[in-house]
Image (cartoon, rainbow, N blue to C red; front, side, top):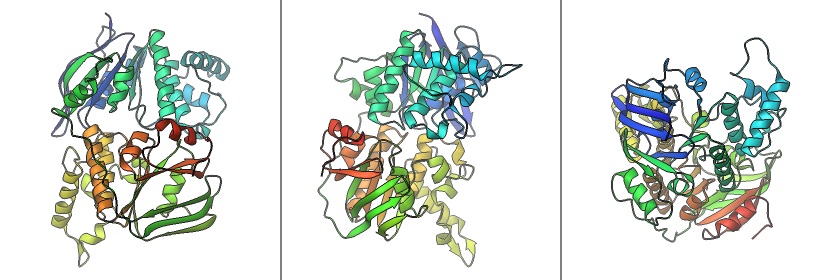
Length: 482
């Protein structure tokens, strides 16, 4: 079978860290492939090498046979290989068609009418509709994802790499995305998905490659009908037996640490009333764009309500966009994990560097951040390890209220369990926790009760064992429940 991409003995080093180690991997044409592994194991780096975004220190990259040279994104896309990166690269003030044409302009002229017609054909292939005149800032997350795919196809990609494409999607949008990918495979395209979600791999992928410590340790067909496949893949990812399931202990609740009464904010929040008590983990479910972001920013003090009342003492917050709101990307791991707390380490107006290193080391170790180089720029970390830095900082602050927006977004199964354990420990020690997540399985496993938001309102307060179908119905604006 023809190979869309072949990587032979590829290596990539960042400083002292070897991100990819002598990896030899191939992806057959016309199939849906998955690449999985823990954070920092080289998954994204490997595929960025294949797409010309990162030049390897050693090894060969072949695209549909010939070697990739020069090693650039332009050359890769000219060979039919493109990438949809984890963080959308869209320009929000521009229209859909302007974003599509950006970087794909003809030498002599721009023909928006012709480009719109081409986009229409691509959308028909994708099974979706995108208005060329719509502004990107008005699109939902699912449509932005489809627009990113359409941009790559517009440039002539026959092989598309998607880096963590479902990290920001709710279950309905995830199903729609994989239906789109299946249509593209049926039309002869090759799809490669980087993901942490083993369930998605088993349900949708034809083959799977497992990365561990920079090496490709497993590459084979997915055994979709084998009930032990999830266990086998998880063991391969972690290099041993996966951890046992967590048990949620009944909580002894204390006083309210967050109280909101009839809070309104423009069109985003419409009469929101909720409370969180000490020792309680309250989940918030909802399709993104239904007021969750504004809710978090209001609790963090970044927005002020138009009317209503809110009472809280002190909150430690993890925002949904770690790169924009949670980290200073060009600062060190040490500075980021202690961000906003440098005053604690000051004596007579001088920073105590030794105390800072001791505290930062403890936080990085507890948060399983890799590599554990405090001087390293956070920008150099994988997306999952960036998330671990933001979560480690929040959990270490010992605040009465923890607000965690998508706390395990982009992190691997082992790290997600570790974060869950630490969140439950914080609640057991008396903190109130508010968790906003698009992952319903996470909320059902973690929360003591789940609030559902739709159209800026809290439309339901549910037990965590409520069915996913019922939660999904309410998230989409179904009948309200008490």
